[in-house]
Length: 324
Image (cartoon, rainbow, N blue to C red; front, side, top):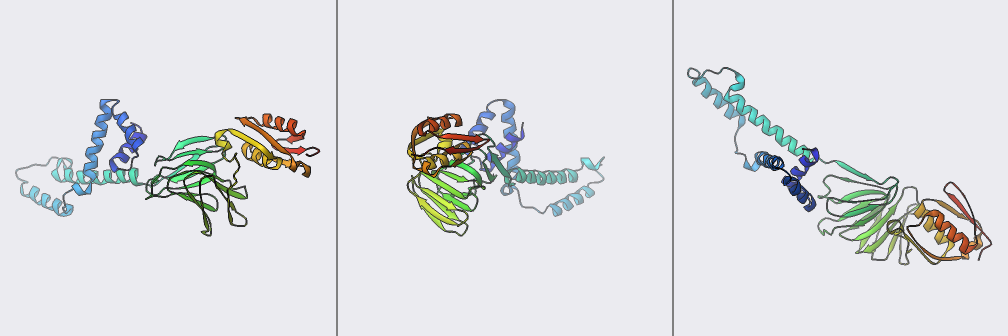
């Protein structure tokens, strides 16, 4: 049996397993008679390790009494080897119980750090409490193995969260000089270390956004909270960009959008840098929509619609033209 199922059994026995993990263990148990026996063996050892089921006794005193009795019966009983004596068996049993209890503690209660990284790909996964997370590229979250006790995580990059509601245990995200706290809702957090602002966009429920000085604002659905990390300033924006979740939906929507805002959206979506050379171009408006677009497709559409001359080198682009 793999270490994975070892830990899964121990979590179920200790009452820390999620409903999904309990179902997974039940499915594994039904796969073979050997698996059922293994689970039953763990249950028996777990009962032995439960301090409430152990009788209260002084082990040193009890061993001395056993030694006295053995000495009194020395004429009748000949001990061929110390490894066959009752004293040794009792001592071995106590030692085994202590070792088993220690191993259970290490496997069940030892806190470990868990890291999820997206790298160059967007990923989706489920946290131990059932909350679902989508991570954008170059993003990472960190949490501990006792997550169900305290729902705290650290985020670097961008992630969308659908949080399982639990009024007794707030879901807290620490993200580069800001803290997001919720009870159960869905929202997006963007907090890249190399960017000057952290952004939180709320889809459902209410979200608390705070800075390092404990200033905070409450955000409702459709609102965006912005933290200026240099000025340590929190602001609320009710007129959100329809492309705030474009990285997750893979859709770009522009409706008479200024070229400046188009450029900012493309920088985030494609991880590029754009410079608008002619200030008169800021008056230009662009309307179009794209489903799972490529950078070349969008650039070509903008170039034709606004009669732009676009020059690029590596991931740096420059928009130039006569203006609108």
